[in-house]
Length: 156
DNA sequence: GCCAACGTTGGC
DNA sequence: GCCAACGTTGGC
Image (cartoon, rainbow, N blue to C red; front, top):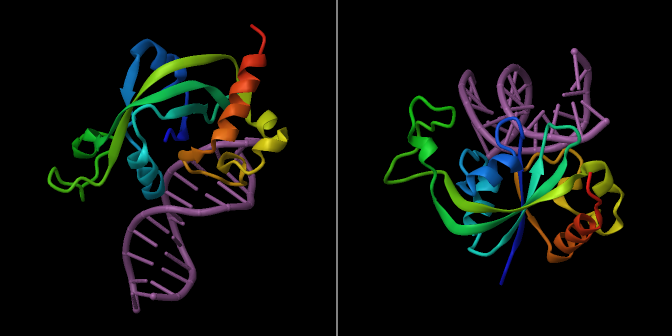
């Protein structure tokens, strides 16, 4: 069964353009247990909505897909790094990351404001007030609505 | 195990 | 820059 997800990223630190030029990346740096559990549930072939947060406008910028299930996130072992976790060990890692690849960049970002206006998307985790979860499950129906909106977008 | 203080996320 | 919503931390 294919599952659907949404991951958030600040384009200033890692944007859909970065993913496009890299081709694929390990989704490192997530340090929230609920989000981690979702990352561990991602399977090869799952579809991923790529969301730009803290940007203008905030919204879904494109699509990615899962190409490898989660492995230990190496950034937790990097003493000098921003994501170092002193409680993590190689034997017992705390944090995991799947690998995702670039699929497509939408012609325009589908803004959060527009998503909120869509009836069929009212129950998305993203739309919940104060939702800070950086990795979220999405239903197939929600994914299809987003894909349909993306298809209807005109070139800039 | 409770809960107050504090830090972070992220839209606006 | 403001602030609501949460997650985390640490004293007790």
